[in-house]
Length: 430
Image (tube, rainbow, N blue to C red; front, side, top):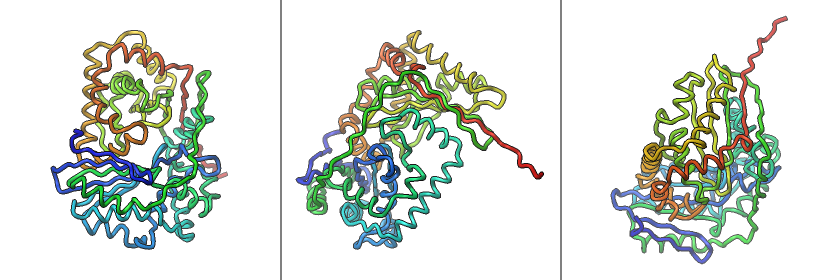
């Protein structure tokens, strides 16, 4: 897997990762910036996501009204996303057209316009997006749980930001954020597909090598103090369904415990897909599905974690059956976790959980686009070796490992439980 892989750093600090894959005449290019909601402060929450939007509003060379047409006209697809730890942009193109994508990303790394009228227009779009989210019970509950779980660390707020900040941030705030973080020494360029490495590296150096690095300091989030007891909260809103979200603090992806916890996730809830651009598989063979859905305590459930730079959360979400209560579902959840903590899981069940996690990982790694994705994504929180050794590390997980991490991380005294209660008040005509 590494024989056609090259990693180098340009003089200006840009990390370049190249992987030749000659199975189809396609190339996928991903540019990653080490900036997300983790790097935001109160008063400017949501700024990374807003800057992502502005990157589609044009440069002098690539005006906004020609960007999308230029990519689609050449048979390409493109998109972008902002998360807790990163912002990424990608294009997957016919191999002989990838130069357009590289030129575009090199240009908007330093020349995005941030036109005041476009900023105002996008403010309306993002506020509307936030308002739409607020109509979703799971967004409201998830935001409350996340804020309770992180009082100190900047994982406290959602990626979209707080409404007050979306109203108050200025064009200059956005542009300053862009100029601080959109620099080659804070970026990773991953390219996979049908190309010659020497020629590709020469072209990337030509396009990106002259962009100056940024001396701006990077904000370092404060560590979250250890929880001193279980926290519970209730959110009320419209709807017909009661939801419960139970969250446990979960280590960063670079922590060795991440791998036995990944197997535990597969066993309890069904394997989580770390590739948010990939698909998923059924969780109907998981312990919690059998304990919650098949017993009709809930009408649905899901669980999972993310690969993050700093410790984040493992979340279990339950849609409570209309004739059951949140406490009944929580009791069943606690019983299943206690079983794993006190009764060692069999080697056969661990093997099945590992197999499921491996299968999902494989599904999210097979295309040229996903191969390019993994190079930059793994580099955000670890390095490419993390990806290359992922399956081996899962295979090395033992029943003792699963039991140990279950005891260490899935403690009631350190979790946050949120309950969403539908309250549909009738409107009086009196």
